[in-house]
Image (cartoon, rainbow, N blue to C red):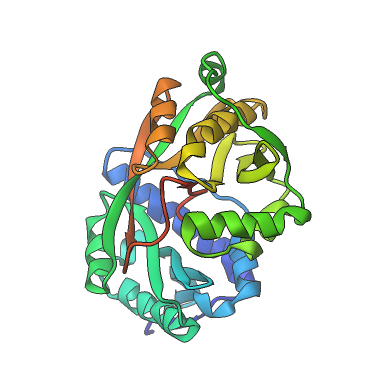
Length: 299
């Protein structure tokens, strides 16, 4: 039977996530990094499906999901969160067909910028994205360390913080426009309501000058944004303290190469660079010395 390409449904998302996990672990294993992905409830995928179903597609063969693509739009930005094909079906054109459908999503949304984050060693996918006008902009490093090692080295400037609430949404939109050029208010609503994360507003004097989210069980930092680059060092050090307070055995973050103060602080705290990624886009956007992404799907 030919492969069928159709819009994703809510009941597809767990199976699609299993395919994504298998594909990532196959890729990272072949490049010497070992398995790094684990299955998680597809809560943000479901949020995106309910928000804008046009961005999620599956490739299906005899009732088996063999490919999955997921994109979201915020303001003028279209972002490809995931595009994966089952390891045993790669090279058969499935990825191209899925990308065509997600690019239609971008066209219909009217987004002016297209972007994604992928592994630097995933050269086949990068070639595909290059053919569609998305070029490498800068590296993004996953950094990680044992919580006890980080907590024993905590020092330097800190910011005041308060738990994030819905009342902070206008301030968060202003910060995102400064850092990324677009407001992500709907995504903040999602994170504030997500029991797996804890959000904090970061203050300089009486100004809400940034925000950060911390994984409650994972100790993962992100997203993190500040209204001015000069606040990033203190914001990231504050995030490290908040992450260590969660009690997870690990602390981690995704740090763009342009976010030099955060990258320097991570190295100072003996965090290891565990694997490299790259942001690709049709045009430069945002100020990435003010923003740390949550993960390659959320940005």
